[in-house]
Image 1 (cartoon, rainbow, N blue to C red):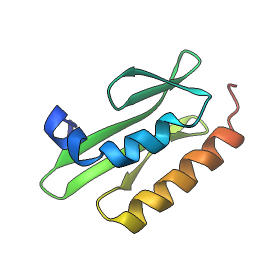
Image 2 (tube, rainbow, N blue to C red):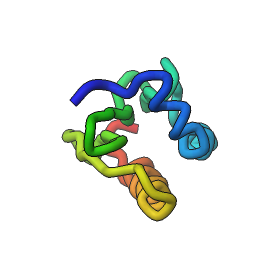
Image 3 (tube, one colour):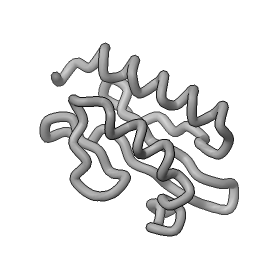
Length: 88
C-alpha cells in the first residue's frame, strides 16, 4: 500500500481541513501530521480505497476513510488519540 498521492489527498481535503484544527498537530507535509517530533498520522491509498494510519500508543492503526461516516469516526479516533497521547 503506497502513501497517498496529491490526487488522493485532494479527495480527503475536507478531512484534512478538520485535522488541521487539532492544535497539537503539526502538518510537516500535506497529509502528514506529527505531534512534537513523533509521526502521528498519514494516509495511504490502494485499490480498496483511502486509509488513514493513526498512532495509538506506540503503534499505527489503519482506518478506512472513504465515506462520510468513516471520516467522522476517524476524527473521533484522532481526538481520542491526542487526549490519551503518552508522548505529549
